[in-house]
Structures are given as structure tokens and as C-alpha cells.
Amino acid sequence: MAEPRDWLQWLRELIKGAGMVLLVLLAVLVLLAVDGLLLIPGLIIAYDLTAIAWQWQGFIPDPQVPPGPWMSMAVGLIATLVPAIVDGVLLHFLPHDKERGTSKSSS
Image (cartoon, rainbow, N blue to C red; front, top):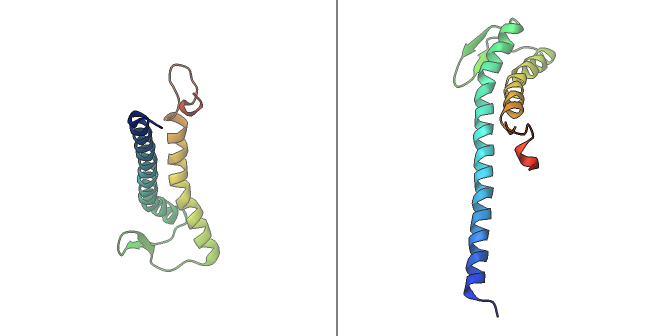
């Protein structure tokens, strides 16, 4: 029969693992929220690059005259490049170990 210490250790490891999973989920949600907020300057840059007049009518900038489908696709592509570039730069610099020059996840 298993000793109570074995069950306690198993329970501690289970709680520790569940806590780590929750921390990862929280980090993903925070990064998604930051990416969502980065879409606002991305839209402003996209409207300025495509010479579309825009206005504030809530949380995000809206075009004064809705563009056609191809221009909408171009605006969406430009707007999503801003969070993608920021994520790419962060993923390039953050996860690297300074001493060995390797990724922390591989160790």
C-alpha cells in the first residue's frame, strides 16, 4: 500500500503542473490582448499608407468611406504586419540564453 507521503508528493506535483499550465495560458491571453491592441496603430498606419480617410467612432479607427474588397484586403494585410513584426522581434530577442546563445526551451 502506498504511503501518505507518496500521495502528498503526487498531489504537490499535480498542483505545480496545473499552476504552470495556468501561467502559460495567462501569458498567451496577455500576448493576444497586446496583439489586439497593436492592431489599432496597424490600422492607422494602413489607412495612411493607402490614403484612406479614417475617423474615430469607438475603439478602432474606421474608414470614412468603406473601401472595396481588394483595398480592404491590403489594409488588413498591412494592419496585421504590425503585431507580427513586434512578435517576431520579441521572439528573436527574449527566449535566448545570453551565456550560451541557445534557446532556453532546448535546455
